[in-house]
Image (cartoon, rainbow, N blue to C red; front, side):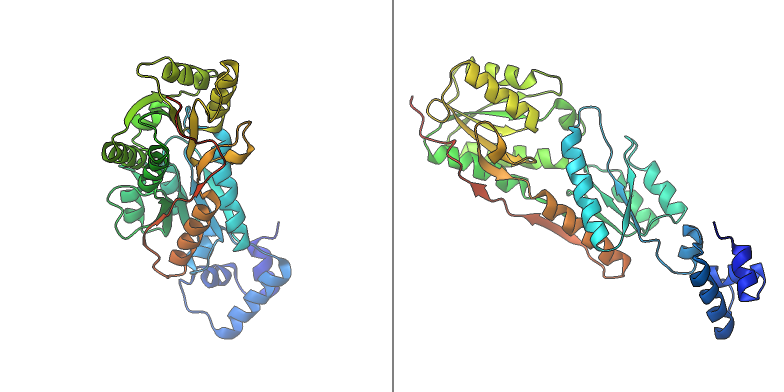
Length: 336
């Protein structure tokens, strides 16, 4: 590894002069700076991130604040991480993953040490502690999700309120009046995940407007929860004629297997809709009509907004992406 001593020797200057050139703390003549720059380039010297930031240069690293909770679905989590990394690499940026449950300490650590140029935050809650921290630190940032009190911050998400209304309306249009919903684990509710609150608001509003009765089940992370949830809906009173899945892929797969075991015909006896699916509903054993989460697009907007803020572009505001419904034949009029 090349040292600052070797750079100083090659440039014919003192170590302190190289340090001043890197930090910008003192004025260095143009000729001397050129010699130092040439030595750095020829030797392949890489000053640490803090020195580059002091000199006003970029580290070309983004932090991805992606807390992984015990009830989270790791494949979905990693789809977001992978999408962020891919977009960052297109812009010649690397990504430093901050994945602990503590959402703030990692951001403070990398910001204080000048390791990163900006932050992308995912797994956003309504009262997200990262919002005041980002403001306090003044670090360029973007959120995949829309927390409360985030005015002026760059945020992007699916319009979950509209997605819920769209899913419910499609079933109501087909004549369904008792609709089941299988949702995410209770932990999502306890953490007040912002997307879930907006989805629930839209679902309740649409059900009220269309005269539809909702019957809810919450599927936890343990194996068999999808089967238990679908059993609880089908065995309840009054029995549902349609189900909206707002849950992770394993839950939906288990529910479909349980329906096959029970001999339930889809959509003849039970209509199914996937709402804001983080997976491809077309790849399921029974392809589902519904709305797919525009995950890659969300991550692209977030990364590019964060980078725009790094560059002084002042990217801000909330962008809610309109849901798109795809009919794959899993919805029909109820038989009863």
